[in-house]
Length: 416
Image: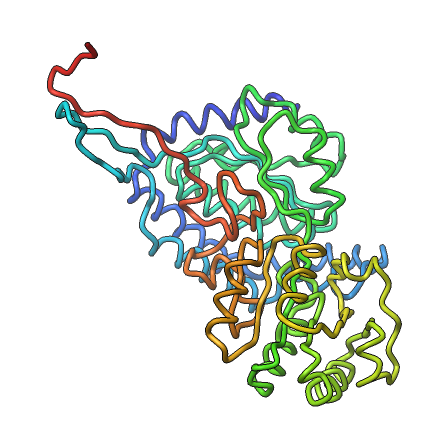
């Protein structure tokens, strides 16, 4: 099917769903999808194996293969995400900020869906379910385009979704999928501004910059996740070690993994030998500045200017010793990507300074950057993380997938 025709059909499905898409129906569809995924778990895993086999043939890295895999645990995670989204309040139709003007009429806002959302993503097939669920619950339609490396996995999941939509007498094009791996299809989608209202790219910086350059449609995005942890001179060092290990090693191929560790010079001699040795034992390659080498120099590489900007998405870490919190904040605001940054400190004033002055969409105190996630934040799941300033910032859940319209209640009021 031509992309323009797919966009038109999805737009029609959106308009139909505006009339029938009440909360009860939305939740029923999501629960039915969860049941269907459970029923077809073996089929989904078998289709995913095709992608994994192709990925190995194409020499995908271990990190990318990890993102691609759909094992039983991750499929159960998708089911849980669906159930959590069902439990969340439906933002559509919510009236808020209502106030009475001096002339007696009322003015307020109502939450409404954005419309048709194009979502372009790479090697994580679980995004198919999360994106479909969040857009549906927030009353939107969506056109999905997953990466070619996850083609069979995505098609299996979309077949489940569309089967459930038809069983509930809902237009199957409410959740559409571009069924070709031809990259020209994405370029064609990006010019369908007559039918598509928002584009959300999820993936590497190259993909996102390409989408932004070519799109006629507004794009909500983050280019990369260069996340920092700063260990202050007043940090609990045992806590800091646990957080640093988790932030780097727990799942290094995701955008909220730590890429740069900053350590205050006053605790560097005590903290770095222990922390860096432990990281190396866990397979982390270290790229360090000259100050760090004074405290730990075993099997490390010299950091270059490019390393401070780097999103490795792998077991690689840049390490720098800083004089104080001001240098740490300055480094983060210069080299960071406005994604997620954390301070480890027992000093509440320094914590407040850090969260006030670090210009990122999520700023943390005594916590791992890995917590920057819609599900962890209580959003049920997320469509992505935005480092833009308009109209949403940080993890995007249900409310961030809506906009608003002004509503006015009068009693015969006219303008004089």
